[in-house]
Length: 228
Image (cartoon, rainbow, N blue to C red; front, side):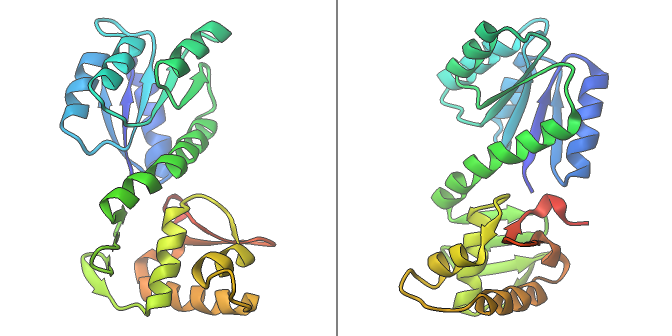
């Protein structure tokens, strides 16, 4: 489960964002200014930062520049009342991954969080060989999967399928795409091959079975935040 740091000096804004992110399945931490945010980021464990620009003491832009100067590469979504093109470009050129202008739709913000994480988390997980989504843990180095701390037995192909879905978290994947990537390009299979393996994989995942979402007319998507 990804952990989001919400940095804003307004308590009501932090509460609004936290409620929607937690409902979507994310863990949240909060900071009231850039100085506090830098201290929390220094401890590690944060997957994404929602960073308000206009704050007292250390503002968001200064915080972002200091993050990048310290080689803290955690993705950042800037949050601000400013809507001018210059301010957006300044944030993006300083290393922000996205930019949301107040007043904002909480649902849009959650969608942007998922989109940024879909681009950035697979790379981080690939480097470490370890994925963690709520109760689900995947370790590619040891070729192991755990649900709620209990190891789950998967066939090699089920494991490859799960890893491929996790690496593409949040993306709708067609059956043809899954066949090409998991069964190799020269595999001439049928759609039901994927469906059968998805069914078996879900049965093994138990409490995490709903992490694999059926996208009607397309294929499947790995989305832990959609699980109820």
